[in-house]
Image (tube, rainbow, N blue to C red; front, side):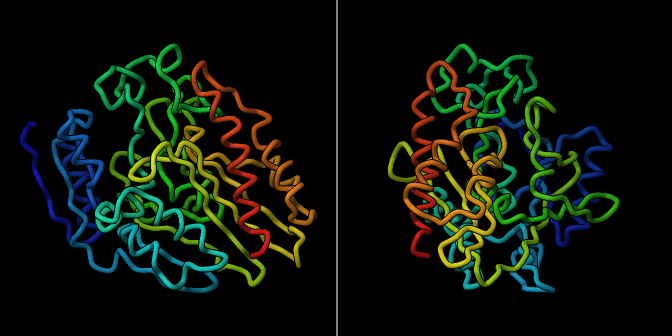
Length: 328
């Protein structure tokens, strides 16, 4: 492993200024909050980095604050903190449950919200040194190769799936992402933050090299809001979702007034299923409705040669997530 320069930032502005200075000097930078994925990539040689900017000394960047009908969450909050915070219950439970589903307790004690959202794909070709789109190459090896865990929706020319658990929950909650760069802060809707490979096959989000995801803001939950996160894995723990579903509903009795349904593990970005959301609106939340919603969710699926098993799995996961809310 090559030698690295480590910079300990005291403020977000320190971090951004250090990043800009390094980039101006022709160096490659990476921000590190928990560093659980970044350090592994550096060791493996899949991340070519000259300067690591450590964010862990920035005070106040891991707080959850309720302000003006919003919940503001700092990007450096750990997944463990996120999974147990008292403000993330009921209508916000989807985010706590998503955070709790990540990895192991040891990982959740270190990994951060911002890091989980911006981690790189876990495609085995990218992670094992193939010169694919994500590594700066000009092809996706999974198209004609091992694609058991790859995309059903939104793929092409790259068919990776987005690895984050908290990202689908944030999209379902209509979060806004707070991004800090040399010109200050800006706010983006969660749906605008993520980038399909058809837009840029080398990136998964819209962050510029010097920009930093510093937090999220989520509308406060309404009294009639319920939510859940359901995840299917290929083993019991410490793995990414084969399929996940984040659901946020506004209910009047047992009837759905408004629905937000977002899939994880099946697309290069958190995949919002607008057809299911429209179908659910105005309907009673019954087992028959949940089953039909699951079928609608996969109507546009385009499986590759070896990932067809994920189609019925996705349908069943949507049905199961909705059934979990029947008695909410």
